[in-house]
Image (cartoon, rainbow over all chains, first blue to last red; front, side, top):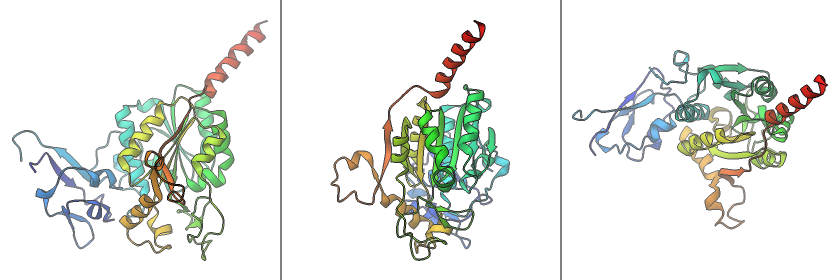
Length: 70
Length: 272
């Protein structure tokens, strides 16, 4: 799927609850040693934004890409 | 760094435990306020005591953090003093149904224009996991180590019976619909209440052998049935389930408007 957004994870805000990792229907994220998400398979992302909507810590952001950027 | 329009971004990260539902409710509320494009100076957020009542700390409005269970009493005062304000009242389940139970039913009865959000995490999280009137029967809490004996409230039915004109229930699993429900509740002139089925992974989930933050969210999801889907389901299938979505919407005259009329009548009497 062509990239529409750039995902950003704020590791300062993230507490590693793992909700985004478990919720993702496309298994985009892997956990690091602290349980925080790493974007492992960005090409699978369908931009449903479920991870952003359910992040309790405001740590995930979807930044819209301008045309031509990818 | 987060740059949400209606949050005090410098106060983040918040104090809640990893996986706490309060953060999801806060982000849903923030999105609803952003969509409604409310004026920061014309909005007041009132809360009582508890984990969920920490929410106004992170919100960039005129905020009021009050005594346990009395958030609605303070909010009634704010609304009556200046009926132009949009007042949100954020309470937990212990705050709204146990300690402030009377305030809740009488705010419903008066139909005063407040937007109440009751974050129901089934437990008193902040004080160490005691049971609340919304702990489901049979579930464990620190003060119910063999399981909750008492039956629990159906909060939405209670609010409706007491006279609230907009009653809805959402869950933290259904984050987008929750935003829509909060937005819709803002349109109601009188007292609106949105109950949010939330999660407490430490005080409730761990004690009840629901391990994992996502598993607890799934447990909440499995307890809930959308009100439209429920219309087609049998009574047996609906046993033990909670209905989510907009449950009641019956507009009636709002309290501060009735009060203004009284002021007018009393003013004429005095001039005579």
